[in-house]
Structure formats: structure tokens, C-alpha cells
Image (cartoon, rainbow, N blue to C red; front, top):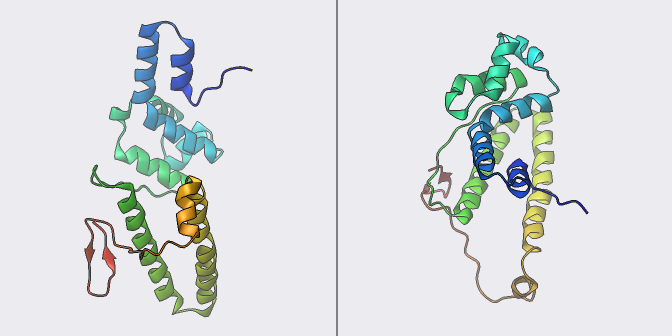
Length: 190
């Protein structure tokens, strides 16, 4: 059976014997990832370079340059233009590099709660919207616990059995570190 590789970098590392080639190829790949990502998005929307150029209002040559450019030469405007042409919105953010995974999950759970509450506020204005919001809440109520359970099932059996067999320990759920909690326990993003 032929050896399988996870990505192009692994392929180059696994097959090439020329150390200089490996080093140069991996450097090139790491420096051109964002342009390739934009090309991937374009292809995912089944658009040619010419078609996205028309949507953006530039030439096909400009699109080719963006998609083959080094990461450092791309601008936020390039990403905004691609996003607008593909019906996508660009989001950029910062987070503390030391933030733990558990705090990331908690942060996103509080964000989810915030968006669900916004949906409820909008639903108060229209019965049709209220029905759709209720359906979505029921869908989330089904899917979110299932995602958590699916993740728990991947734990070693010894850990999972402690939970299943009824640990007597109380469970405490806290907000993510770095978030301020208002008097009504609504989390504020860091």
C-alpha cells in the first residue's frame, strides 16, 4: 500500500532527499498560505478568477497576483473584497496566547447564549420569526449536548465510567477567565 501524507509539507518531507529543496519548498508554502486560502474559497464557490474579478471590479490578473502573493503583501482590503464577492464577512480578532482551551469553550458558550438571547428579542416582534427561533432553539438543544457527549465518549473508558457510574462530586461551571460578569450573570467578552 502506498504511503499516505496528511498535507503537502508532509509529502515533501517524506519523499524528497534534497534538504535545500525541502527547506525552500516548506518556506514557500508557509509564506503563501493566505493567498492559497483565498483561492480555496473562490473554488469552493465555483468561481473562476475572471468571475470573481468581475464581482470585485478588478482584472483577472489582479486576482492571480493575490492568490499567488506572499502573505505579507496581502492587505485587509484583499480579504474584504473576496468576502464581499463571495457573500462572506471578514472577522479578525485577538486573544491571549495563554488562554486555555476550557476558557475558549466557556467564552464561546457565553457568546452562543448572547446570540440566542438576541434572536429571542427579535422574535418578540413577529410570530413567524418566533416560530423559527423556537425551532432553532430546539435544534440547538438537541445538537449541543450531543456534541459534548460525542467528545466525552472519546475519553478513555476509565474517565468516562466515573461520570456514568455516578460520581458524588458537585459540578461547578464558571465563566471564562478574563470575562467580567455583570450582576445578572451575563458574560461580557474579554
